Amino acid sequence: EYIDNRGERDIQLPSPQDFEWRPVARELIVEGRHPHLNILDTIFVDTIGGDLTIKVENNTATGKGVYSDPVADPNQSLDDAEFFFAELGQLILLKIRPYQEPQWRYLVFNRLNESVVRIDAIGESCVQLPDNHGILFPGGFYLQTGDYKTFNEPNTGLRFKRAIKSPNGEDVLFLLYEPVNGLVALYPYNLIERQLRTPLYAHGCARFEDGRMLMFQAESEPTRVHPMQLWQTPFYSDVHASQTQQSRTFFGRIGNADLVRGISDLFGVCQLIRKPDAQATHYHELCKYAGRLFDQYHWIGATEM
Image 1 (cartoon, rainbow, N blue to C red):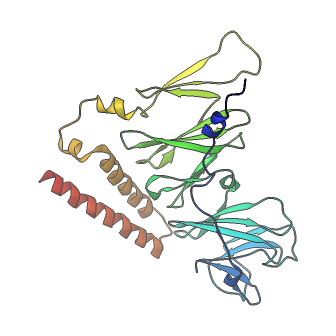
Image 2 (tube, one colour):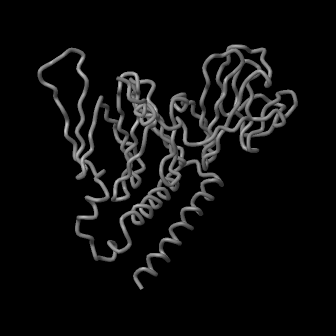
Image 3 (cartoon, helix red, strand yellow):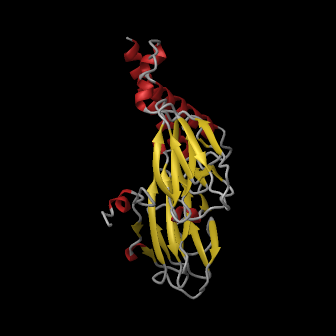
């Protein structure tokens, strides 16, 4: 007997990206010997002459750029290809499909080091990391500082499902889901270290109030024994966190979330200082960190008084 299809609506996944792609209008074309598109007066893109080219100078006298990738049709014009972009802090994400090519290309441009990386996994799913740290996609992450890491992702079709924040304010668990095989991918991200730990995969998982997480894998053949994994994680519930004794020390009154944010900013400053190819944008970014840390210092001083 048919009852309803409420469950179908309940399991709907959110949008693959938590930002909006902006189309590149034709008015942004800069004519010349090597015409290109002017995106945010920062990067200049074209798909003509046999290559997808990205330049950092608005110069039509030369076709050379900081990034180049061959296209299928060398005789296409700028009007033949499709261009979209999104601005996320220091990152500019590009979504490009050259003429008569079935696959979209996804690129990340970083203002700090003026580098370009092609990451097609962004098309499957892409969400922003907390506190504007960068972006996360199936198989890796890319930070605003230019650091990025990818894992040998054997699974395709993963899409963002939801994020779980730990009460300690230090960790965030991103859940990605592949609906055909029912695969769940768990991506734990640490805000202080600014690192994505090795993903965990399962065909089913359950999270308990105290943070324990039970996971199991589907077997290719029926078996009598079904092995499971039990992990202790920091992703316990707010109710469980409220039952623990609260610290009355100076740092306890500040709160772990604010301490994590301050330490994370200090780590960000250290990463920028270690960059060998410092540019003006690096100093602008250091000023932003210094401003946030200064505000936190005054807030902490007022709390202590």
